[in-house]
Image (cartoon, rainbow, N blue to C red; front, top):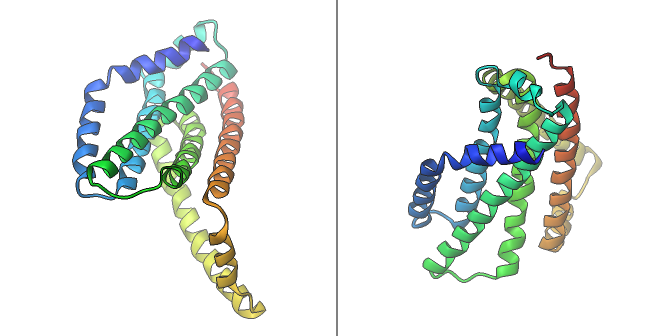
Length: 221
């Protein structure tokens, strides 16, 4: 598994020119954009770069070659998820550093702990996105995965609209004080909310890994 993780990091290292370009783009955007944009931008770029390694693995019958090595489907998936976690963590930390550099450069006042607790929300959010993308990409391949994701997001959008109408009807019919509930949620400490979201993101990531193992085991090479 260590060799597979190292392989993926070496693949990313070959894209260092692209990474330098992203840093320059982030720097110039930091001069005019909100500092949190830098963190979300870097986390998104990290997620996309991490997922491109799947395309490299599948390219030119790469999977059959990998399976001739002393590697089974479970080991391959474990390695891919470990790499995805570490890769996203690397880009997230880089984004946090650039964010604080931007705040200092723009001479904005900020609380370190409060800013970090808000930043912590981004990591599980993008971890969830990667967890959603990995099993779909392993199952359908990079090209078909885009179509599947468009369908999923379309379904989520429709369900969201329906859920909104149901919620509005429920609040109106049962006289629920929604404002009071929101106020109580806002009163919760940011650290508690951030840690709760981090736990949910990691849980979703683990569930995604179990699904990917099942998909990979059914593949024929």
